[in-house]
Length: 395
Ligand code: C2E
Ligand code: CA
Ligand code: CA
Image 1 (tube, protein in one colour):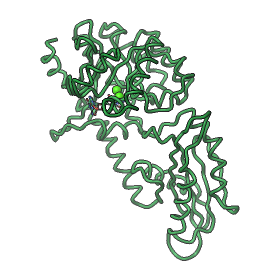
Image 2 (image 1 turned 135 degrees about the vertical axis):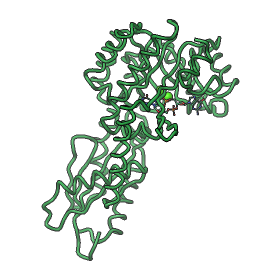
Image 3 (image 1 turned 120 degrees about the vertical axis):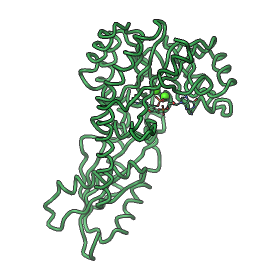
Image 4 (image 1 turned 60 degrees about the horizontal axis):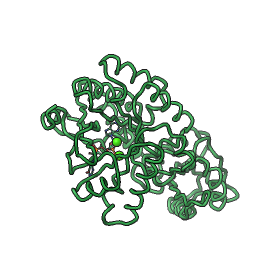
C-alpha cells in the first residue's frame, strides 16, 4: 500500500472447517457459514464498509479508508480473533478456519474485477502457506506461475510416462496373508528423482490435471489386476474432483471390460471430508459405482466431521481408520478409544475396517485383538514398485 492517502481495499474472506487441510468444505461447514459468518463478521466490519456473501463459503468485503498496510494488518488480526472460538453446532464444537486475501482497489475504483482476481490470488497464497491472510503483491503472481509450471510439468510427466503406481500390501489382520494392495502414485523425473505425492497431489487437485491423472491411475491399476492372482484386490485413491465427473463410472467400467477384470477386485478410496461436500451428488455417484460392483472405502476416517446420520446412508464397503489414530493408539487412551469405536461402528454397519499406518508388531497384534479386518503399514512393507511387489510376494 503506498502513499499517505486513504484507499479502499477489497478482501475475500473464506471459512473452512479447520480439520480439512485441502480446502474442501463440508455441508456442515457450508451451513455454518450462514449461521456464523454473518454474525461474526458484523463484529468485524465497520458501518462504512460493504460486504456481500458470495455463493460459496466466501465473503467479499470492501474496507473503506485504509490508510496504511499496518492498519490493514490490524483489521486482519481482529478478523482472526473473531473466528478463534469454535462454533457449536448441534452440541458439537466445530473449529473454524478463516483465511483472507486482500487487494487494493485502484483510486478510480473502476477495476473491481482486477481487485477480485488479485484478492483471490492473495487468498490462495495465504491458504497454501497456512497464514491468516495475505495482501496481493507481484509475488503472488509469481507463486501462481510456479503452480502453473508444476501443473504443466505434471501434464508432461503423464504424457511421457513419468508417473508410476507403487503398491503397498494390505494384509489379513489375523493371518497376515496378502489380500491386496493400495496403489500410491510416485513421480520419477527425468533427472532421476522420485517425488512423493505430498509434493504434487495438492496442486494437481487444485487444477484440472488431477482428472487425467486419476483416470490414468484407475486404468493402470486395473491393468495390473489383470496380471495378478484372482484373489487379490487393488485400491486406488480417487480425487474428489473426479468423483464429481459424470464419466467416472464409464471410465471404471471400460477399464474393467478392456482388461477382463472382476469389478469386486477394484477398490476406490475417497476421503471422508469430501463425503460431506455436495453430499447428494457424491452419494449418487458412489451408488452408481457400486452398481458396477467396485468396492468403496472411506479413507482417512476420523479426521473430518462425520455425523452418524450421514454414516447410516453411506453406500460404502470399507472404512480406513486414519493413520494418525493408529500410530498413537498404544500411547494415547483417546486414540485407542477412537480406534475401538470406529471398528465397532463399521462392523455394526457390516463394513470392513482397515487400519493404516501399522508400524509395529504390538500395534498389529492389538488391532487383530480388536477384530480389525485388514492391516496396512510399514510393519508389513512400504509402498513398492510393481516389479518388486511381484517378486517379494511371488505373484
Ligand atoms: P493416503 O491415501 O492416506 O495413503 C497412505 C499414505 O501413508 C501413503 O503415503 C503411505 O506411503 C503412507 N504410509 C503407509 N504406511 C505407513 C506407516 O506405517 N506409517 C506412516 N507414517 N505412513 C505410512 P504417500 O504414498 O506419500 O501418499 C500420500 C497421500 O497422497 C495419500 O494418502 C493420498 O491421499 C495421496 N495419493 C497418493 N497416490 C494418489 C493417487 O494416485 N491419487 C490421488 N488422488 N491421491 C493419491
Ligand atoms: Ca488412501
Ligand atoms: Ca489414508
